[in-house]
Image (cartoon, rainbow, N blue to C red):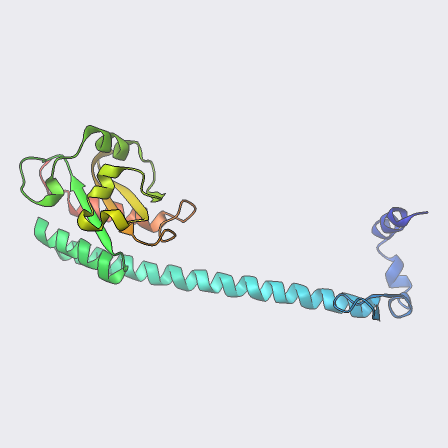
Amino acid sequence: MNAHDVARYLRDNPDFLAEHGELFTQLTVPHPQHGGQAISLAERQLHALRDKIRQLELKLAELIRFGEENDDISEKVHRLSVALLAAASYDAVRHALYSCLQEDFAVPHVALRLWDAAGARSEPEYAEVSEAARLYAAELRHPYCGAPGTIEIVGWFGEAAPHVRSVALMPLRRQGRAFGLLALGSEEGERFYPEMGTLYLGRIAELTAAALQGEPA
């Protein structure tokens, strides 16, 4: 009989140790933290349970932290929603959007481009956008987060463009068709990264698109 046979027997006969409880105090195993010290099976089980409790406590603390972060983001999105609802003109929408993203969300660089009315408006947001950039926005199914890969879009950040190391790009849609792109930029390479969640970014894009529904199409 080898170790595998013993392990299999104990698994197949779960009542064995219950019927031979004295083994918990008679058998010893190495201490999990002090290899030269022997402890009983009962003590070893206690150490295992303590380790499991510590792991659960760490997991719970992580979940609580994530919950608090989500609550904080939800509150910021709510304030943005209220600000956009209160905006009665395009200038007011633009001011509310830029102010909330830069001040509330601490995003250093924000750029917006709308191309349905390009040439009909003089604001920077209606500046000419290449067909490639429009196609890129149309093909985005979810907000893009990561390193800046499109020179043209990064250029929308103006003088800050050479220093931008990560971006979040959010297509704006009207009746399923992309009519603009909201871009966020940061000098921090890990501010917007590929694995980050995009749920709230998507909601911000939807709020922005809805606030701009009254603009020329």
